[in-house]
Image (cartoon, rainbow, N blue to C red; front, side, top):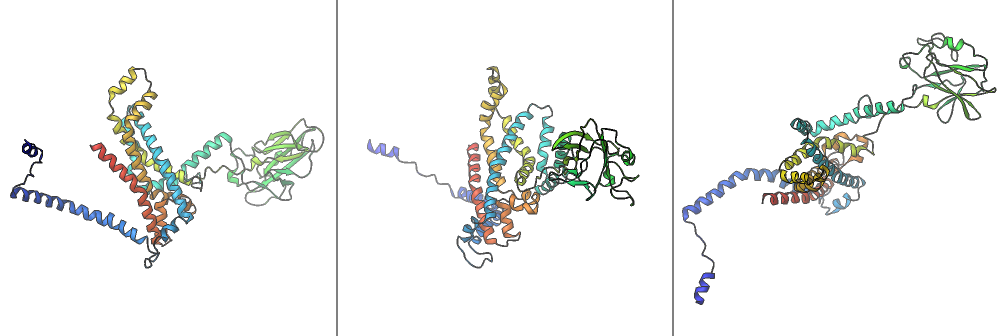
Length: 453
């Protein structure tokens, strides 16, 4: 009985394959290895060897001849430019993947309700076909501070001018010694008091004749017209005669009036009356009390025009580049999330609708939880991608603000080849970048394996 029990609990003897079968299996392994060998050699030459070389090179000085140990890693975290690159990389990792995943999710849900969904997806996915170099050039032009070149600033200036207006004569100024003094607030004022019944001529220069309003008329007749009793009048004119000639401070027959100038009559620091010059530059103040007044040309007449937003300045350069990145990758996130959305069980959505749930409740409590694995894969993939971003930062950021926009990838290149010529420190930066990317890659691989199981 005991012998029988022992015999039953012993493991079965190993199965030995006959000689031809073993040779066939060995041959299959060799053939498989031969097929994989080119890929392994390529992977070793392009990935493994550069990684090992960079790790070794990071322990040597800039010339590569003297072993310095961990000095490059210590110096890396003492360098302000490197710390700024780490900070900017952290901003990229936190902001860009989250925005892209959110935008992709919203667009994927909305596209399902659009009639021309395929065309809409194609339109959003098209930027993926544009290289980062071309996209960087496009957005470098779009962000140009000159409104005549940058489309974003052109729109910002147009909107600002439509809401707040613009100054009519930003380059105008008064001649010295001709009766107008510049005040601290940028306005021009008459030095001597002017009383009702008198007339003044206020000459300005610095306005190109080509920039005069289309309806501007000569100021000579208005200047020759006397003021009515009890009325303070005057004319604002361009004290410049095209083609030469004329006399300074005198309204010549060919000199034009400046329409649209805001003028005030001021007494004891208080505004008594306000007027706007006519097409010939004339203005009139009626019903004024007796006594001297100061005539003032408001500073708003000469304010510099609104030039738009400094998109590529030190403050906004990183958000501006992230905006370009969003333009490129939003279609990618939308398509992947849309593919996951197409696999959701429709019966669960319909059951929720029959139970009285609205679309927001369905989206928040059913769609998003069911899409969580897809959203995680998209988010982690984008995290890996933004850690390596280089092209957009290098191309879009102008030279003076390159350091304000730098990330680890651009800092590594700048230190190694862009003027620093310290490949030891650059290799240390590369190793740091690798260490930051590897955990996200491992997480993504595990997610893929679990999904395959």
